[in-house]
Length: 162
Length: 76
Image 1 (cartoon, helix red, strand yellow):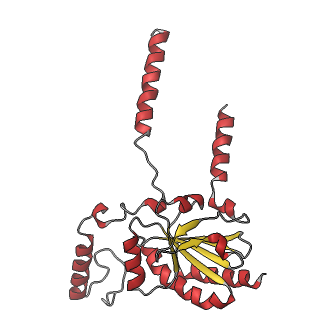
Image 2 (cartoon, each protein chain N blue to C red):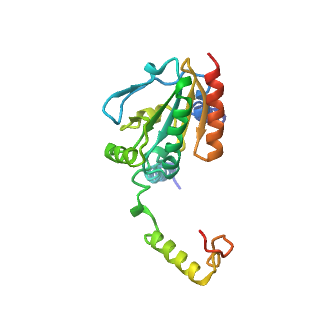
Image 3 (cartoon, chains in turn purple, orange):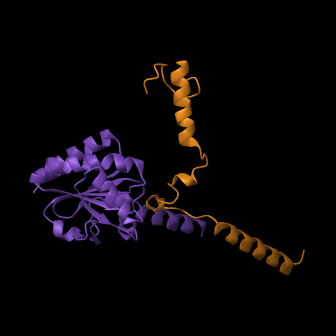
């Protein structure tokens, strides 16, 4: 019985691992955009999507976001869409932050944290690279300039694929 | 000890453990907004202390002398 219990717990933990999402279809979502519109993952099919979970109260996220805006500009023409999903409680903080640093990104507001739940976010910030067919290909947790270089290389690789 | 008493004690112990376990909560990384606020910091004067330390290190040319790393140039 103890063995069965251990196995059940191990299987549950294994299935709940975010890495299990690699190679699988990205969870569809539709969220209100910070600017008032709606951001739906489905509408970005055919593009490579960099889905980033961030918050204004998270230091590394604040460092990373302007860099992601730069990455968006760098690869926009080739078909990259960066979606910055904020998990802030107050959307006003997000608007103020984006305005202050003049960040022009597609920012969606996950007020109830349901999308973060669905993607099993285990570190802030977290980035999910989704290919043109809507399959999760890479997951990155945390932010360092080296990590961002890897992300850029992976974006380049995914954009080359049809 | 009678069997019934032992059973009762075990049940009470399990019940107590259950109540204690309820006090443990896992906060997901994206739910830490309130915990990330400065008021939640154990050291309430952290920022002020850092400024004071920087001032002292610059004055004394002793960067790193208080415990941090650095070569004494007071340039950071």
